[in-house]
Image (cartoon, rainbow, N blue to C red; front, side, top):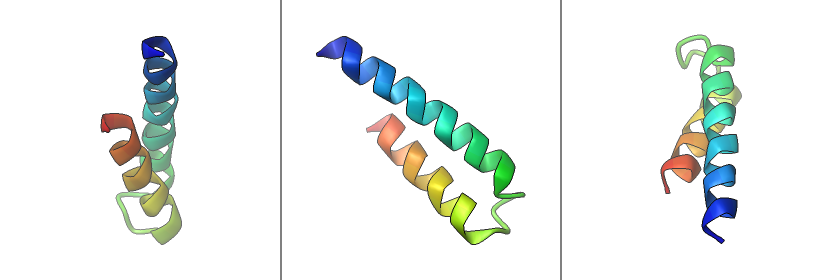
Length: 44
């Protein structure tokens, strides 16, 4: 179970890092929302 959580967290790390690039400094709404959601899930 720990490995599944680790891999899931790693995938969400990728998600929020790509979302940060697409959000253009949080000036675009939906990529910014995806970035924040991915960050919260990744850290949780």
